[in-house]
Length: 356
Image (cartoon, rainbow, N blue to C red):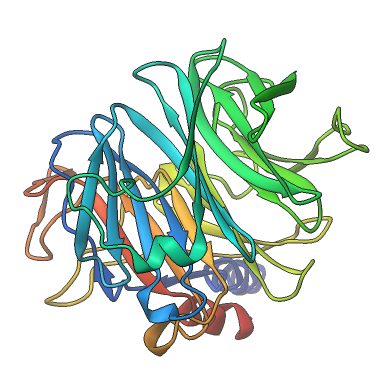
C-alpha cells in the first residue's frame, strides 16, 4: 500500500508540473466579424505607427473576399475587395512599409510599398484601404500558393511562399520580382515567420508529423538542413499553424506557434535549441469577449504601443467566434457570429512567462 501512495505522490507531482506549463489569459478587444460566413478570417498583421504608436493598425484577411483594416481596439476602418487573400505579412524600415499577401484568385503575390509618412497621414478610403500613393506589384507564381511570410535580407524585402496541398516553398526577392529558388519542406505548409536578425525561417509543416521547423540561411541560398523545433510527438496538438516572433533584443526573444488541434499557443526560446517554455490559451472573459478556438494566423509585436499595449500586442484569428453565453451541447458550439480576430496585450503573456 505504501508503494501505491508513493507512486501516486510522484504522479501528482508530475501532473502538477505538466499543468503548470499551461496558462490561461483573456483578450481585451476583438474585431468586428468578417462579412463572409464559414471558414473565412485567416491571417492578421500589424503596422506600427512609429510617430504615434496608439494609432498603429491591424490588417486581417478574409480568405474569401479581401483584406480588412482595424485600429488596435478592433474597430473596422476599411476593406479592400481583392479576392481570395489567404495570408498577409508586413515589414517596416525607417522610410517604407512593405506589405505582401497571397492572392489565390489569380495565384499571385500582391506586393505593396508605402511611404511611412504618407500611409499614416492620408485619409483612409473605407472601400479601398490601399488607395493611397503606393508602388504595387502583382507577381505570378507557378505553384498553388497558400501561405506567405516576408523578411528583410540586407535591407531587401523577400517573401517565402508555401504551396497548397504540396511540399514546395518558393523564395522571392520582391522589389525585382525574382524567384531565387524552391525547396521541399516535406509536406503542406502554411504558417511561417522570418527572423530578420537571426536569418532564420520558422515554418509549420501540417502533414505527416505536424512539425515546426527552423531553417538557417547558408549564405544567401540554399538553406541548411532544418532543425526540428517541435512536433505532434511533443507539444503540438493537431496542425501547427500561425508562427510569430516577440523580440526582447535584436537576436533574443520568444517564438510563438498556434497549436490548432488543442486550441493553444506554444512559446519557445527564439534562440537555438528553441526550448519549449509554456503553452497558453485565450479563454472566455466572464460576461465579455469569448476566447479563441482552432486559430489559423497570429501576429505579434514587441513595440511599445502605449496604454494596455505598452509591452506589445498579440493578434489571433478565432475559428469559432461565439458569445460568452453560448453553451457546449454534444461538444458542438452554437456559432452565432462570423469569424474574427482577438486582441491581447503581450504583457499578460510576459507575466506568465516570467513567473516560470
